[in-house]
Amino acid sequence: MSNLPVVAVVGRPNVGKSTFFNKIVGSRLAIVEDVPGVTRDRIYAEADWNGKNFALIDTGGIDEKSDDVIFSQMREQAEIAMDMASVIVFMVDGKEGLTTNDSEVATLLRMTKKPVILIVNKVDGGRIPDDFYDFYELGFGEPIPISATNMTNLGDALDEIVAGLEQIPEEEDDADSIKLAIIGKPNVGKSSFVNTVVGENRVIVSEIAGTTRDSIDTPFEFEGEKFVLIDTAGIRRRAKVNEGVERYSVVRAIGAIERCDVCLVMIDATEGITDQDKKIAGLAHESGKGIVLCVNKWDLLKKETNTMEKYREKMMKELPFLSYVPSVFISVKDGQRLRNVLEIVSTVAANCAMRIPTGQLNALIQDAMAMKQPPSDKGKRLKIYYVSQVGVQPPLFSFKINKRDLMHFSYSRYLENRIRDVYGFTGTPIRFVFREKIGPEE
Image (cartoon, rainbow, N blue to C red; front, side, top):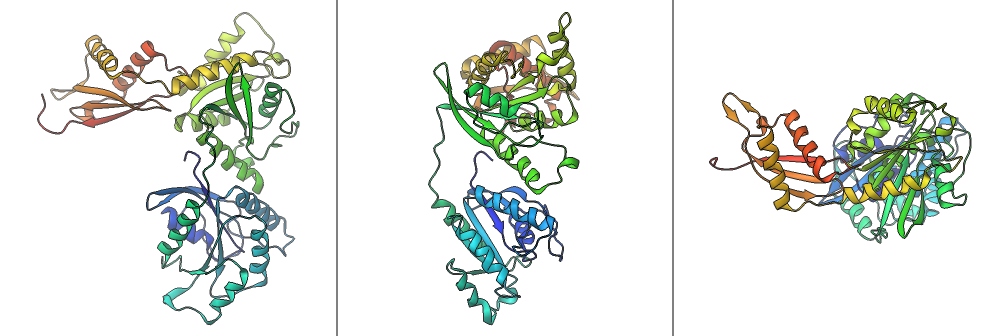
């Protein structure tokens, strides 16, 4: 999901948005129940149609007349989703016909200046209801009749969505900039880090956890190198995410991880590694991003002999899957080691994009096999015929082997360590893909 265009599905409650969403993404990710207001948060998933990839957001129903707190939050989160969207799907109910609520939602949508595709759901049996043409009054062109439940005309709806996406001009990619996402729990100092590094108050800083509710991009230059700093909302444990906007913050933070080059995982030195820290770091690791562990509020810790090294060892015991990741101990308040952070980030970004010449790579693997014989099973030994690097960000290596079942995890890890011993790849995950050779073995 690298910077995918976003399609937000909006409308008043109980028009079938979640059913439509589930059919498009191919799984029941959203709760479907015939009671208004069941979908209280957006659900977010990747989808594709005819080779066009996009992110689909299912929102809670908008009810402009309701003063209910939950409906108010649903309206707010839907407005944020619409703000983020490239194309908006406005869904109405063909059985009920045009309602005052539909007209009020339409007014809200016109203010966004975004492309809007009007879909009339619950048109079952292929019969267009007599009042279908009332929906033209909403001002969004020809309505598309569908039945999400029966999957009728979904292809036509998707064709219109993709056509709308293709009309959106592509954003500048900042290809020459290092995109750095600052992620972590609320109130660990992410916004303060951005403000201090940039030298001016670009984002709101507050002692109230969760102040930053969106991802904020700040272009910045350091020693001739361009950065885009992405300050994200703090990611909370699900049990504590009980406000609509906060739930959306998690989606936005995950989106920031996907579109960045390097993640700065910020940890509170006074709290140590928490379960939520592990989950946040895992998101970055699984996304294949470069990672730097940044331990903030180091000034508040009482120091003894080798305090930093002992802290780092303890941290690695808690985060063993990040053994390749560098760590830096800072105090944003005192401006301590902030230059070091950017220097390390620059190195990690370069490592993510590093390529190893094929000849050197195969020589390295052959030497590794000579030092440690490949595993065997029932008299059959693993053979590695050829290796090539087929991708970067993260570095991806393709192995041509005789039998995939013979490539044990431990040997794969051994080969990764040998590559790291020679080429470093500090701060970036490494991915392997194993392909069996077709035809007789040599």
